[in-house]
Length: 419
Ligand code: S3P
Image (cartoon, rainbow, N blue to C red; front, side):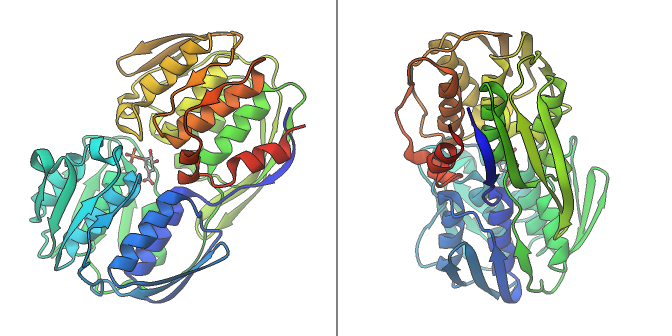
């Protein structure tokens, strides 16, 4: 069982943005509670290659911003490692800067679609080259001279939205980015605090170009996507009671809390407060014997997209049929997460069926140990380590190191809570 309190590590999405926006601001920035995960370190490394002075001290990062037009042409390739957020958002920034740069990444990045970003950036006037008409890495961006855009987003993606907002900072006129479903809005919140001219009207975001962004001190709230593993661990193991402190509770990210409540899970938000424009609170989660199934569809998917692997584990312990649909995006994450979840849970004895855009899970089933293929996907490794908490025989993960992408110290944290 899991018992005790736990101080949550910093949010990955917000940490990336803090480095990027600080780098293109003018002056000294201090970022506290920064997530020292591999993905965020990839972002740091890319901006260092463009001449930004970035110092790490403990879990604080000091960034001396070069100004909106002050990045230097990189002498080397910009390697984003495993990070989709880095490659998408950075593409938007590079499109606005008057030099060319080439983006590469690891094997998983090489399979993740980029046309969703490169197409609208080309509409803004940017020249881009890359594999399969700039759908895959390596991608070369020849930045500068952007036009404003009025763009209806075909996919619900905060990465695409953010790339276009960033490019719009450099355009010659106003841009409007229109979403169909609201995706995470950390870019809008944080860029405003840096002095960007951004107006959000429900699903439409209007950006007017500015001459400069101004330095900030940023506190990064805890990552609810990392908390998700501890939440599910506590809900499914008998006798558990965990207090997760300092959880980012931005409405665009809290789908998992709504789902847990719908499933009759025992979760309580306490001590809510606003920190740097972001809502933060503590979560008290207790073992929940009588979980029931639920349906998860497009109305909530963007608010919990990264949590679906561990929600699937939770659903195996809920009475009834859980349906997860409208989640095609899962196929183009760090791995094909529909397949990674369904195949591995099947091996463990779950009653689960793959759908074209999701999965159907019938509970409650006992789970058994098995050899788990993670596809080096951090969230798959963690989701199955949580499933392991209720198995009689242990699972074997083919890769644990990938967890450092988003949750360094994960097994230590889990061990401290385990009794
Ligand atoms: C992220 C947005 C989401 C999410 C990813 C982080 C971000 O991706 O899955 O882990 O920081 O903007 P999409 O925007 O592609 O849905």
